[in-house]
Image (cartoon, rainbow, N blue to C red):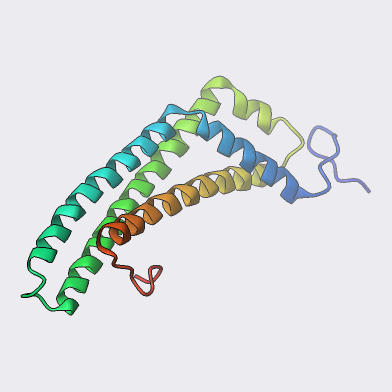
Length: 167
């Protein structure tokens, strides 16, 4: 017996495929929204300001190098990396809220979501696809921003945490 949707049309054989297609479309739709590009520009601005501030702190540390133990220098660098990561975390959370609300409200206003719901796709597949699309977008943003913070610290001071993924 074939699996039919509420309209009598056959459902896709692989439900994960439908979710992945919706995830790809969600990612693409979000990349067309201006709010994503504003978030990316603000992220780049943050990295530039962070690099300028960290450069000044590094200069001050190097001036006091003879009077400050290496352990204390590393603690200051470690604190600055963690402060940068907290800022990246905040930016990622704000991007998650703003992009998902903007994209979903745009789909409702334009009627795109109504067209999608009328297709032979289960609602949980749509929800999973939307979630995967936004999760992939946020993961890419988080990796770029966190990598930027770690790269700034390493390029300016030469300091690299032994376990950068640990808190």
